[in-house]
Length: 414
Image 1 (spheres, helix red, strand yellow):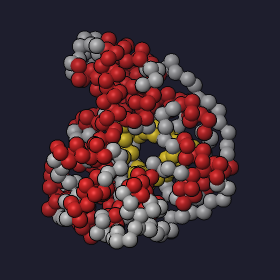
Image 2 (cartoon, helix red, strand yellow; image 1 turned 120 degrees about the vertical axis):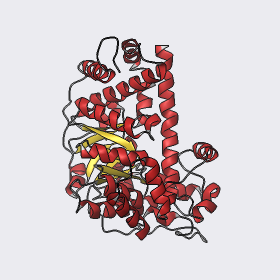
Image 3 (cartoon, one colour; image 1 turned 90 degrees about the vertical axis):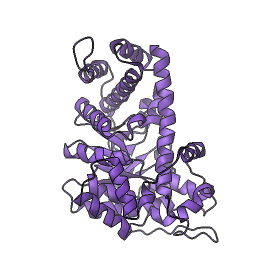
């Protein structure tokens, strides 16, 4: 599409972002910290999970190498009003577009511009996230992924959500050499499948939510479930990567406490909220040893069986998942539907469940932590799985925050 100025919208937005970013702050100098240096010494790369530049500056040391944002974190920054003038300027620049496309483009501008500010301030890699409206759109995900990469090819990592469309888009982006942080993963089997099929640069286990699921639903004490799943995923992904041309690295994400930093020492990457990093620095002695060989034991409530309740699917990779991975690699699905159909045909449909609109309403109303009692019978029947519920819940949460960001854009440009 051409704008009134004769440029494509993509070119116009690209130039606008670079012009605005040229006015932003320069890199700061940071000191080394032997505490974090020791953790790097056992093989763990350190990222901060925040978009707050001032707050991150108080935690950052030379041992940190990246920051990761998402729809929620970006929305927090935008709602401070710091980008209102950018939104108005973008609205005038893109006035020839229809309203939905103009909002989408300005949301992209905000994501890219804030990402560049983080890059410049910290001289770091930054994960930037796709708009939630394109989570199921392969072509749009590829297009916006390419556009992010064009803006900052050396520093941007494109976050693609774990959907069937995300699998296919990631394969294309990685084939073009674009780094991808494949997000909203919660299990070893999810990450094994995408590592085999699409070789993303990074995969995630949002371990804090897994522990909360067990505790909040009174399935157990909530300890070590996420840690166990993360280490199982690390092992599965590492095995795939040893044979892959493009290796995949494991992220321990959504860490809720400082002790988890100790218990996951040696994992490829930790992305820590500011509070977790501060707590680790305060409570731990900095004497690190790799925990990659640990097989943590999760304690469940009386009568709760890990397999029957579906919890073991968080850390097990079975023959069924291996067969699905083989099938996807041997016969590349041409569409998300074909990928989902293949999963159901091979007995792993619960990783891509067919959810009704009412299901989606329940998932959104539950929040980030699904209510086990609502889904227990369907989990037991193999219709859906806990990891898939979490992925859907995470996407629903991001969608709500993206809507809040988009609403602010609409108010300012209307």
